[in-house]
Amino acid sequence: MKPITRSLTLVMMVASTVLATAQAADKSAAPEKKASGRKPFTPEEHALHLPYPPPDSPKLAADDLVHETVDGTVVVEAEHFTAQRLDMIRRWYLSSAQHTPAAKPDGDPVNVDNAGGGAYMEALPDTFVTDDDRAIDGINIGLHPGSIAVLCYKVHFSEPGRYYLWTRIRSDDEEDNTMNAGLNDTWQASAKCLQFQKHTKAWQWGNIIRDPKGPQHPRLLAWLDVPSAGVHTVMFSMREDGLCFDRFILTTNKDFAKPEGTGPAATPAKTGKLPEPIAAK
Ligand SMILES: [Ca+2]
Ligand SMILES: [Ca+2]
Ligand SMILES: [Ca+2]
Image 1 (cartoon, protein in one colour):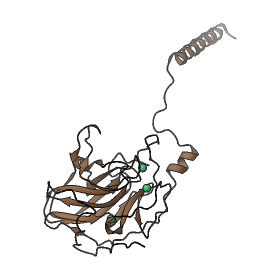
Image 2 (spheres, rainbow, N blue to C red):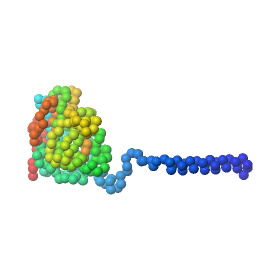
Image 3 (cartoon, protein in one colour):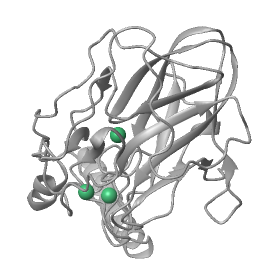
């Protein structure tokens, strides 16, 4: 080895030793880096949260069904939707005395008692059940309105304006008492996180949203602003899985009294035909 080569080799050896020492010191000094992003599923979690819901939910309404406002109010059964979207991970399942969703897990049986039209829709499977369960956005919770399990209803509005939203739902556990509403693929802040009482195990009407500042703040009225007279698409998307959705009302009357029981009769269709109520067996 020539002297110049020997010197170069020596310099490189020293440099690499210094670097290795520095790296070792750095490693011992630096705190353990936390993994960012979503923690990967274990095979057991994958099987629990992503079981691929069975495509067994019938659709009662024909595609031409259009609901309409009468004197500024429309009353619609949740099961009278005309389209369902983004339903690969969670889906709204028809539930009635004659329809039991095949999707699992679901912690409770069909509870059709006192449901309007003898039927309701439930977002399943239901894997976000208690505060201890892992909540995963886009799987068992939809923090972004319109991101998962979307039901669509065509409604003819006789006039544009602000329509206050009343929704009838049922919460059977700790984590199934919120949903989102929108219009024409626009998810207005005034209908984000419709908030209901949890774990009531009974049907309830609600007309409020959670304050965007947090659940400890006062609730705000829920509404949708309708830009023009004519047919628009009213939408509901899952927020917490397992919520049971029976009916909704849109009304220009800000002081609309909280409905009792199932509430007013469903508004007759503008076009198409309202499906018949589903009889108890
Ligand atoms: Ca749930
Ligand atoms: Ca359930
Ligand atoms: Ca219903």
